[in-house]
Length: 445
Ligand code: ADP
Image (tube, rainbow, N blue to C red; front, side, top):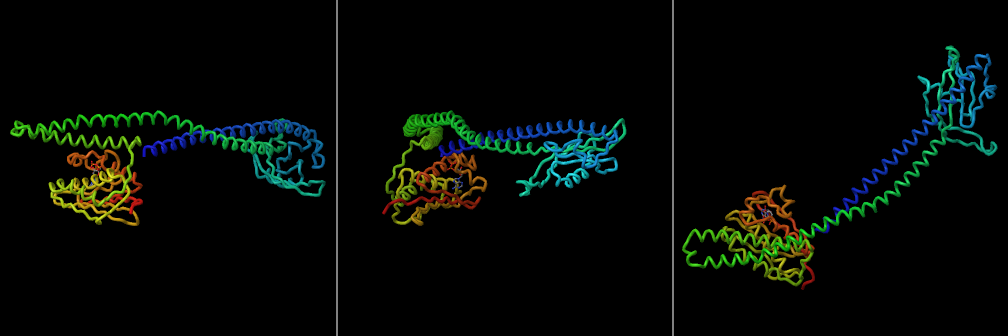
């Protein structure tokens, strides 16, 4: 149980640490990638902006000098190609009066893109993607490719006179190619660092758990030692009280008798608590050994019922035992007896005067079934999952009154688990409770 707790905490820490590291890495790569993307686009915008300005000046001057620019001649003016993919000059009436492009077949698409776009101000840019088709292998093949263009529109004017607009576009596919590669490399790095992050987190979690485990162990040892040390003075006290009770002067004094009875009760309660604490401390530290032998459970149940009968009689509770004549299982005798006592004692404790409590034993598919049923106060739905927790008591006042500390069921659960079994509870408030234990019978005749 303790091991499980440390393991789950360690796993949670690993997940938390590596999750955070991976998240940080992913965020970091995303930011780096975004920054590079924006910087590259910005550089492209600046370049194309400068180019457009230069070309606009040149074209405006040519237009003023009266040079017409039929399509055929425009190449003389600006040779589109290379990085600059196209240029078009549009007059104020919206007619294209000159232009050129690197791949002729894309003219229509480009003109459509320009017409659909009306740049509101100077220095506006638009990135478009275009599917272009061009001959390859000496006209033997036709290749189609998707390219990315950055375009801008610049007004053509001369001394305040509007001559038209110049549109130019630059092929910026390489930026996207570069960006794709960059993302690929970053994703690879994130994957690599994810593995590193996992191992680093594992190492860090293990280190973080060391002091916790050490402190837990020390605390366990303390509880174990303290309970062990307390047992001797408690038994001395009990013996002394017993001796005092037999003293004639005390016998005759009702006050002293009452006081001694109270003391005895409290010492017994404390002895039980100390015993339970010692058991739990030993189970935690794994120093409790299981001594397996063939146990006649019927015989044991008889004995337990005998032991608890006085308590039942005191509360006028009918105590029943239903079990086959002989019932052997492989188990730890002392622990199994403790289990029966805990469950039956609870059944009596939490049943009102005049009620009934029943212990039944039986075999079901090679498994021992122990049922402890009572028609007592029952357990509320919300308490049902917690009653097996240490020191959990549904009704603290009542439990204390009847000498409970809330450790019984956690010990019972541990004993059941020690025998690879299960324990469950069915209960209805005010109606009664049934605890059902299931344990493999083991290899007995
Ligand atoms: P305690 O020493 O208080 O009896 P346990 O661990 O044995 O501690 O039980 C935990 C709590 O479960 C009890 O305080 C009680 O509220 C509830 N409980 C256990 N057995 C029964 C039962 N048979 N009927 C009703 N409540 C029960």
